[in-house]
Length: 484
Image (cartoon, rainbow, N blue to C red; front, side, top):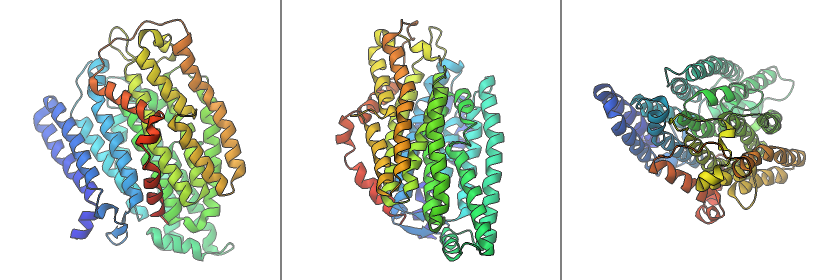
């Protein structure tokens, strides 16, 4: 039991921290928000430290229910960073936009969601996967509707809940099929069942149907086409710090879960799930690029950008190799910096009354009134578009090279061409900031934390990031190889 607890120590730290902070929030009320928020960040740091040692040893805990390996540790490190950022940027947003101070339940829900995400990316059993996913989802539904007096936030929470419940049902049905035809829910046993079943056998078709439904349920969580319909509405309606959380931490956990299931539980069925992944990748890249062109709301545009980017990420997964998985992890790390930076810039979009502005036209002429902010946003947009020498180019190049080396030449070619289409709406933002007539200047008063996050993100995705993140390629390869 002691060894099992050490391997699951990051989740233990987060769970105990969340429960204790919940008690502090209950007794301290709104006045405890600041203390609970910064303590929550400290808990996330503690969980990150706990990733070193048994939590990344490559062993199984609780008889295979939980896998403590380098892949899970790497994904969790990214999740904890994104969650911590979503906590620290929230107080300023709620005070300025919602007209009310942030309530202490917010960081507690973030910690509980992080617990669920950690269980997802380290799952060694289909039931562990489902329990972790539901814990993350339930916290996310509440976070989406956290602004109770805002109709859009309530609508976002309701849509997310209804469609999320449907996706959970699809996933659970797929799990039941896989269990029924394999006789186990352990990833190792499921993999053996797929390896031992030949086409034409009675259980073959049942396992394939189960595979389809499991990937459909996970696809909803990743927000890939055709299960993307909730993303623009929820991203637009949810509070901006929550939207940043959905676009980073939730995205990372869902992609890592898909990789874990594909390579672990269903690795022998590679030729079957590869078709699903290739379709979802191409559909997401193309629809995400085309649908974003006509958007006038910056949060909806970033929602379609996230759909587009997860399509590129799936190109690496479709390769089915350690190189492909390493490319996926590298892309996720770079994607966090680009997306966090873009959303913190969105937080600076405030009118003279302090209310949040979301129209793309409100960025007009930003280079004249806030040249530093415009330069940072331009860096993030160029990087998301994959323009060299920014790090976003390296991320796209990594997944395309993995696809080429796996012999998936048509996928790489179509993905590359579609990335050119997607560059249009990123360049449109830059054109608005630098060439359009100035709109009313944004209100000043952003926090030092927000300014620091923008600067740090811009440096990471700039050419200087090649030096700062030089060891990242080695870490991602080590993490990827732990799955094979």
